[in-house]
Length: 381
Length: 139
Image (tube, rainbow over all chains, first blue to last red; front, side):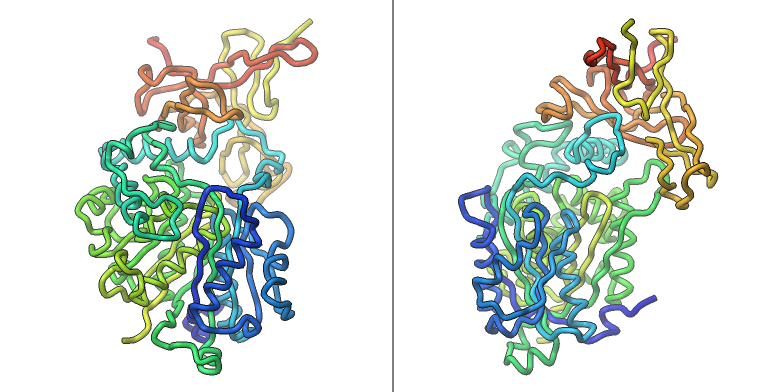
């Protein structure tokens, strides 16, 4: 086994910046990316030439979009690498940035996620494998929702409560794509497939999110505020194995990825104050609060309805609004989660602030087959 | 003479008798792993490939784990009204299918079997068949 993040040089998130997630617009990805990077630099109060290396997460922009963005910041000669890992691309960019600093290769590294809906097809359509039915991920999640409802005797209103909570959280998030609180009636309107309705499926759009990670040396040398530096204490990346028939891949994969992250961070699920999960569809939040160990198996709906995952509850889940309401523009999503939990751990989340937030976890799944988990810790008071 | 042909010949068989049920072509690895669809590129469980994987015809019979009506199918998925489901084959693998039934006719755990449904004709005038699943009727 290699070394965990905590066994290497300490890594800190020192700057965050977002461009609002939104419907595809006239803005170019260059403009979206620049807005996020400039905000992250301003947040950390560091100059662009101090950034030594950049990882650019995107899924839809084609070859090497990073340079087209960075040239407008002044061409400094920094290392630029694109990162693609489906919905988890942004999380993988954050992980690469952390590993770069932890290993001592760089002192200050940027993870940028940027995307615009484009025409890039899923590479899985090129594998040559034939399928019995053209069933999209959305339909798979509709079936998974039904299975969950049958197994635990949960009704559509209980599932819809996920969207109710997350749309309410996003109403206070200026970077969210959907900033509107919704009634149960509204959430249950517009059926798409099975129990899934339009407001229980994440919107796809465009946007950008940037995170700057730094070593202690960089923090000292650049005069970065230590009390706003949030340490990353675990970074785990896994892919699926073969599970027993009837077991859900995303649930088992999340369970084993999170378990490894807890060991590496030397914490347990009960220690978490803030969690962002891959809630692209409402049922996912229930499945993941269980798989992360925030509650027991089959207890997800009760955990939610008791208010334990609300802001102010035991552990605020998707205080940003999550993928369901903040949005899921692919490349930015995983970076945006880390920006959100950093804001929370600094105590700078305003009306969305989880009181006394000390430990946070960010979780993403990509194409149902890869999973990334990061754990972050608040600066000491 | 036009024939009845499968849309995907690597996925299921088309028996001579028009009403006979199709068989699904599964991979059976020497490690014991049975999977659908079949391929010999390599077993997902153990990595064995080529002749160490047998292609076996498995009866398209199983149990319905879940089903859902698709209210607004997108073009490649099919046309409304459409019902999709998750089927666990008696032989082991579970996968998603299009059902040849309305939601009211279905229940979780119900026995289902493969049925061949005419979808269109190819350039040679052959009838192209899709494999869907339908609930077992009263015996």
